[in-house]
Image (cartoon, rainbow over all chains, first blue to last red; front, top):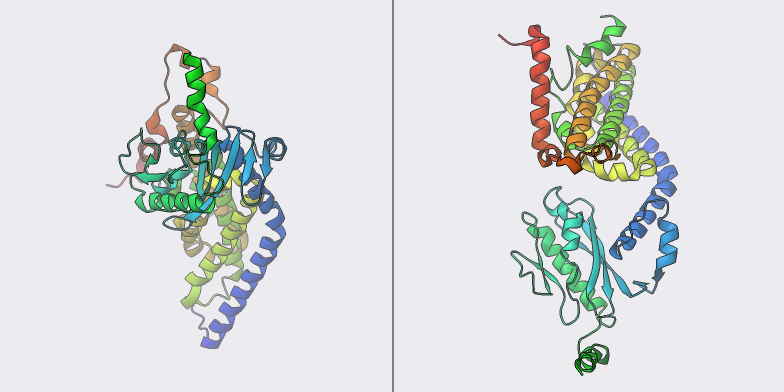
Length: 206
Length: 205
C-alpha cells in the first residue's frame, strides 16, 4: 500500500479502466436490447388492454391485443370506442398513459405510467386507484384537468395527487394536449348522435 | 481467519444489517413482497462477490489516491450489468425494484467490503467474504419479505395463502401497516433486539 504511483500512471490507469468498463457495458447493452424491447412492447400492449378492462399477462398480451385492438394512424380503436395515447412530462422525466373513450367521449378506462416520478407521491399516477378516478369523466367540450379537492360530480375534474402537484400538473397538460391533438376524433355534444338520446326517451314515456 | 468463517460470520455475529447496520435503506424499500426481496438479495450477492474479486485482483495496481473512484467504477459497471439483465429477463421485477437496483451502487455494504476487505486480501477470501456478506443481507431481506407479504397482502410469492386457508371467511384481515416501509424498520428493530439478546457480547456497555 505504501507504493507510490506517478501522476501519469494514475491518468493512464483511470483512462484504461473507464474504457474497459465502457466496452463491457456497450457489448452487454447491445446484446440484451432485443429482449428488453420485446418486454417493453408487451408492456405497452398490456397497458392498452387494461384501459378496456382486460388484464393481460406478458405472455398472452400479443394474442389479446390482436383480438381486441386495432391500430389507427396515431391512436387505437376497440369495439366501442377509441384509445388515445398520452405523452407528457412529469417532475423528473417523461410520463405517459392511455385513455379509452366510448363513442360519447366518456372515459371507460385509463392507465398511466412514468419513468422516474417520486415513489409514493407523483409515482402514484401509475396506481389503479388514480386511474379509476378518470372513469366516467368526459373529454367532449373541454379536457379533463386535475385539481385539488375536485368536485366528483364535475365530469371535467379529477382529484389531483396530494404531494404530487408537479406531476399532477404534467398530467393536466398531457390531457389538454391530447384534447387538442385529437379534437377531430372527440364527439362533441352538438353532433346529431347525442341528440338521438332524448328522442328515444320521449318514445319511452309515450 | 478461516475461509469458512468468512461465509459464516456475516450471517450472525457480523451481519451487515443487524450488526454493521448497513444497507438498511434498500432493505426497507424492497421487502413489501417476497419476490422483489429475493431478486434484490441475489443482485446484491452477485455485485458484492464480483466487485470484491475484481478489486482484490486489482488491489496492487490501484493507486491509493483514486481507489474510491476505481471501486465506484467497478461497482457501477456491475450494477448496470445486473440492471440490464433484469430488464431483459425479469422485467416486472425490475420495474418494481426501479431505482433500488441502481442504488446498489451506493449500498454501503458493497463499498464497505471493498474498502475494508478486498483492498487488502487475496481474491479467494474476498470472494467468500462477498458471498458471506451478500448472504447475511439476503437472510434479513427474505425474512422481512416473507413476514411483510404474508401478513400485509396475505400472499407468498403471489400465491394467496390466507385465502386458501379460508381465514378471510372467519373475519381475518390483512395488516395494511405491514406493507408500509416503517413497519419494515420496526421489524428490523425487533430482529436486532432478538439477535442482541442471543449475542450478549455484541451489546455495548
